Image 1 (cartoon, rainbow, N blue to C red):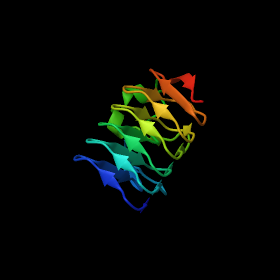
Image 2 (image 1 turned 90 degrees about the vertical axis):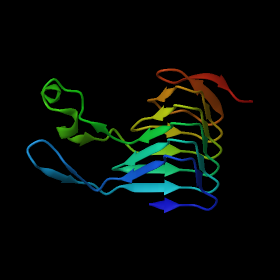
Image 3 (image 1 turned 90 degrees about the horizontal axis):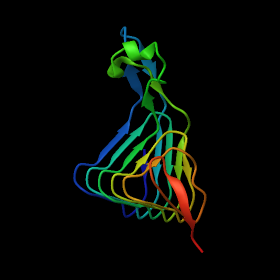
Length: 151
């Protein structure tokens, strides 16, 4: 875990780098998490960052309350897994998360596995980011969609 200068977080911040996880049957799976946070990053109250693979956050990120940045899921959503308690399912990663510079994630935004958010992006409150967002855009919704390109 690397954290840049001038880092701030509201109460209740959870930052997890999970290097081992026990799944159903007692099997343990090992991970090599990498969490890198740039300079001048400000997380709102109740933010949660969970990493088993790779999360890279650029400089000047601002988030509202209860932001979730999670590079993994409990399982892949198969029918066979549905018969296993969620906590006993293997952790699954679709890909790393990259968040550029000068990004604003509104209150209750969730950024999910395998997403790249470009520079100068604003994501509206209560949005779920499931796909890449290019530089200089405003996105919102569930799932988040580009609603405007900044000029």
